[in-house]
Image (cartoon, rainbow, N blue to C red; front, side, top):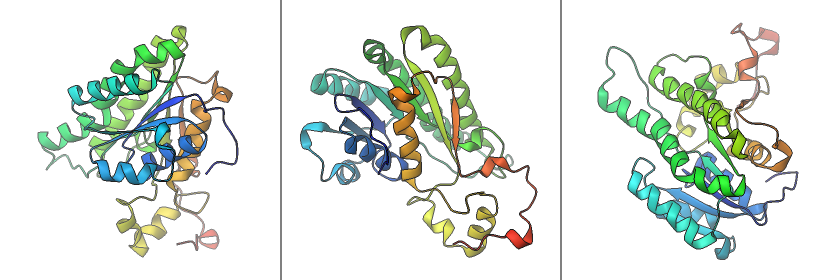
Length: 265
């Protein structure tokens, strides 16, 4: 998956939301680089698909809901029992749904808040003691949506903005312990959930008009950035929120000139 090679052979990595999409790509990227990887998600079968073909000795499948503190605690204990250490935590699990202020309800807010934000806090609280021992690091998968706003997504954007602030604050608190904390901020990325929207030709055209590189991100694009950020070459980077979004945020919002209109699909 990656052009570069990274020294992850003796490292232990936890990836949440690892059953599909970005999480699956991240887990497989670390496995390809020789790491032992604990894959965590709500359903066991997709997790098994993620790790298929890799050495079972380097894999731990953890079927758990990231919003269940007790389940997370058991998962972290299982990692310690199996591998004896933890070097990298990738907080990838997330959810999204439209939100409009006139119709938004408490249940929707609780779903977004608990998965996108509270689970990251809970995961950090449980794993930081292990990361202190290895001088490891946390990479949160945030979103470019946590920087500017979006139409009809105020609640999702709010949770991702909170994750970005959380990462920066934890980086300050944990830096003296040698623990780095960073975030990757993707834009619209191809996945099982987004594929249907991209089948709408008009939506795809308008989306690509915002992307300098003229294509939608693939999960592997995000995974490669995580490999770098979690590794020793990024050893002096902490508290960073790094956009991996094909130049989406490079624009001031001015439409692409007609003569340069994207022809990609």
